[in-house]
Amino acid sequence: ILFSVKAKEVKFKENTLYRWVFYFVMMQTLFYTSLVVTSFVSFFFMPNLGDELIANISFMFTVSFFFALSIHLFWNQNILRKLKYFSHIADETIVNNSAFKDLQHITSLVYREKIFTEPENNIDGISKKIGISKSELSTLINTEYSSFSTWINDIKIDYSIELIQNSYLKNHSVVALAQECGFKSKNTFYRAFKRKTGLTPIAFLNNLKITANINQKKLP
Image 1 (cartoon, rainbow, N blue to C red):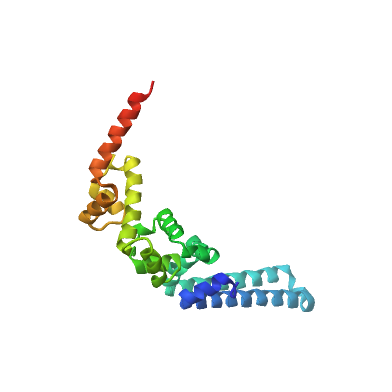
Image 2 (cartoon, one colour):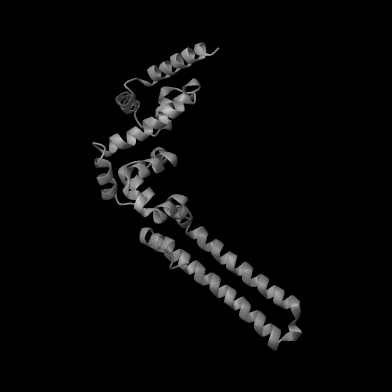
């Protein structure tokens, strides 16, 4: 496990987390080995101790192990937050690394996992999240878009269109829609939306209603 592809990926991205996992595995191995040795010695060399003492020894080793683990995690709570490197996104990066040379695949992943709605939705945060370098991501984006902002805003607008089509504006404001899609500015959202659709969000919604009414009238 410690020398697997996933472990090497963790070691490269977060050496502190890797060292913690390494020591955790070593501690677990030590406790398990001690338990086996104790049981072996008790069984062959001290048979008079009985099964009850062996069970108590096993219990003491188990409690001691998890007590030590709990204390360590209490004083190193940031370790748990760093376990994000074991997420399915990281797995997909390792397994399908060649696919991450394709902007369409990256765009689909960013949209599907809603990475653009996270606080760090800039090029640094997204490249780190999906597991490729900032320069690689920038190069891929520049093959089809004028800038990172244009690319990420297009993804956000696609999501806003999906929400509008699912009646999001029935119970929410346009500002709420912008924030839901990862925009920090209402004006930026309006500009990006109009650039992609040629309409404002409200005008786009009205067009949907008109189209729905026309289609309804055509029904027998």
